[in-house]
Length: 415
Image (tube, rainbow, N blue to C red):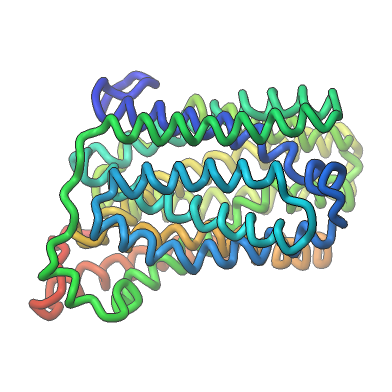
């Protein structure tokens, strides 16, 4: 694995450039979209939240069939087509006026984004050797954070201007970024689609693979760390501590910067199922420690709270990077090679579920229960991380002994 923060030349670098292109646009979109829909389109905040919840629920449902489409039609063309579809849906927001058109456009956007993620993972699996995938995904995660940071800065300029033209410029930028992403992916080598013989034998598809479903569920529990940074910690700081509100932004910058700099290094030792499950277990232990530290920030002086919260955030981002590296390896190694898009589409629903259900769970635990809520959250995540080992062993055993008509994963020793 390369020591550089830049992926090797060839398909890996092109995939990183495609990631950078659309993440810049997404960063600008994320920081401006809520105010655009409320201030420019004129929707009530509650209706915006409802519409986006519905949209991402729909997106999580269509991720699997769109991933299966990538397997059947080839991931390169499917990924490029879905990037173009994302550009079109972003552009449609420029003319949306009213709640129903907004919901329809948001559903199309979320569906295209979910399908694009699955198709891009299948494309990566087809172009990059198995031993190099986790390292590349670490590069892509660093690239994603860098692009989001740049895009957020551009979005901040639009927020400062506060004009309709500035908001429209952000959406146009996001649409163009996905056009560039599509162009870059079309320049990659093609990956052969699944043969017609394999297609006819799937039935319920990935849902029949109960060990993989369990691994995905456990990973979804671990992904509660995502709304923790964007919602749980901000609410905790403002509702339960004496720390200044600006610390919310500082902790976000700390997290983003740490992932940009250290994610590649953190993923370096994850090369197979055994090392992946060890990384996930370590992430659970560190996450429990992080939750315990965060809980200590309540009831102390403002500057003591700041120090405690920074320490908790450092532990949290270490756990995040370990969990990410381990889960990437598991998602690929436990999926049949000829159904990669379908399986990655299903595994990716964990992100959507965590983002949809996480705010409700974290608000109840942290704001409602306080310190016991933090400890319960850390305990649940520790239990999920330790359960990943037995679930992975079940997955490899089932694959080895499964019926011959199903694609068989190669057995890999798991500690």
